[in-house]
Image 1 (cartoon, rainbow, N blue to C red):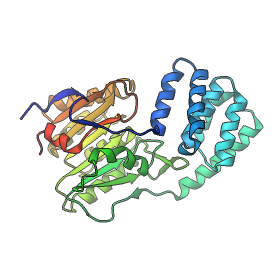
Image 2: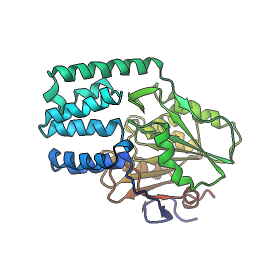
Image 3: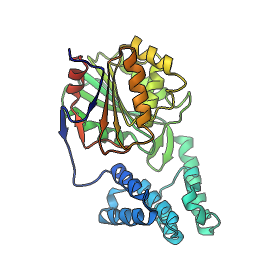
Amino acid sequence: MEDAHKIISSNYFKEEFSSDMKKENDLLEETLSIAENGYAEAYRFLQEEYEKNPENYGPQTLYFLACLAGGANLPEKALEWLRMAILDNGWWYRPEVLEDEDLASLKNNLAFISLKSISDHRYADAVSRTKEVFTWERKNADNLFLAVHGNTQNGQTARDDWKPLLRDNPQWQLETIQSAEPDGYGTYRWSYDMVSYVPVAEAMEKMQNKGYNKIVCGGFSAGCDMLLRATIFTPARCDMLILQSPWIPILPDHTEELVNSVKQKNIALKIFCGSDDEDCLPMAKQLYEVTNRVGIPVELAIQEGNRHQFSKELFALKDFFKLLGRE
């Protein structure tokens, strides 16, 4: 068996999948990159992209447009985008995001105050009635892939992001677990506490007794932290964790427990992170180092030129088991 403990580039065993339409997250990451050189340029870029196909972009895009306009000293434009999102489209946001410093110029604007009040009430209503959503109903394939979304995403986002990995392989069943904590209209979040991860742990534990040959769990960003918490603090287990752009604040204070749990449960790790993901790449490297040090099967693939996002080029799932010696 080849050495399974190595950092690799993402140039092996990959197939490209692409679409003429940019995914919303990819568009927003590109916008953030442009914004590093100035909000005005980023605002023009995102506005032009949005106007090409407005029906394909949701609340996050309009929120970005509002914040970019505010940061570019265009408060009336910022107000127009929020009015479109909240009044015209019926959307809403988590209260604190409308307190962003880029919207500070609107703080005392009566129209903005009214819009925020409407949004806050919709958020409170959503919090009172939202429950987690686990899509699994029955076993219909030999193997299971459980996908966990990141913050400002939902279960459908997770399904769309991870489905290319399976290449429509009929031996694999793809299911998702969606958080019970609203983030904004149609999106959800995970909190980094001892409660939010519980639905993920319960979904993993439920699958352990359903007769699957292999169970793989994939998480994006905050979803990675939920999978690691489930692994540390509960009996939940799987054959492999695939972590994309891992935002994992659990790691610094629970390194020993994490390493022991992953090793004891014989879980292999595959970690992906963009080379330009300044926040998550240090965490990805640290997780690789502490697990590699004790002999846990682990790989880190650094995706060149990527930020906080999935790469357009992904491994096929079958290749993970080849590379980690678990065919």
